[in-house]
Length: 305
Image 1: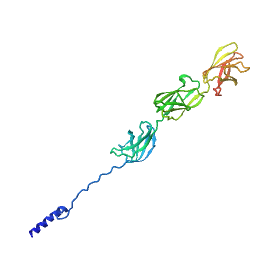
Image 2: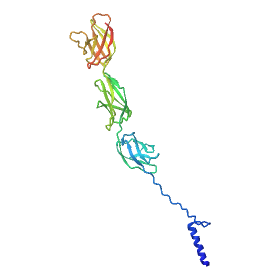
Image 3: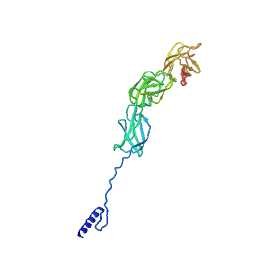
Image 4: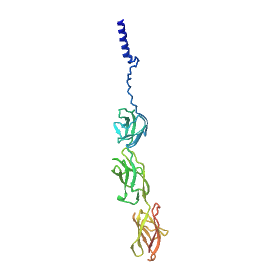
């Protein structure tokens, strides 16, 4: 009987230990913490890339998820300046690399990377912001025909296109390049800069002013029956005519049949009018210069014999 009692007591202790019976005989159970599962890092998902190509310096915006403040963009092996601009927006600036096709992907600080996408890096496009000067006179010579193009992205080996044709130029820096304006007709002409990769800037206008302009009229040498009237100004041409009170005198140094008075072309800034007055008293008359292309100066009033 005593052996049976001992066996029952041992069995009770064993069951108490396994089921957690307390001193009051109630089962309290064993509280064991279940092992926690490792949380999987969210993937980096890219839905769109806008634009899908661009030149160095272009801002590229990616839309998707899984971005962080420490996520970086890589173009090939080159890290690009990057920033998170929203929960589902990420941007980077295309780095200064040679044009071509590159592998684009994002990498987060925990080592997670996105899928790899193709990104086309375009040649850097020259940009013209201004011409100095933007207008020149048709008769300008020497340094007066030099124009400086201001802008950016002017690479070594860039050249100037004038009305679609390449002309000699001189690169001063990445922001300026100069050239001499060729001898062309007056009016508006197009200027561009083309890079060594054959990428051209947008065209800008250069205006060549061919309109004659009278700045002064003075008396010159006096002879037996005529005197010189010196007309000074700009953009006079060989063959320019002078209109005096509605009477036209052709240029070239030859007088019209039956006409003694004539016009001598000295240069684009000076005409000489050989005037034959019928008496030496002062008179007031109107004078105008007309070029062979029919461009006209303003009419000026002259007081002379």
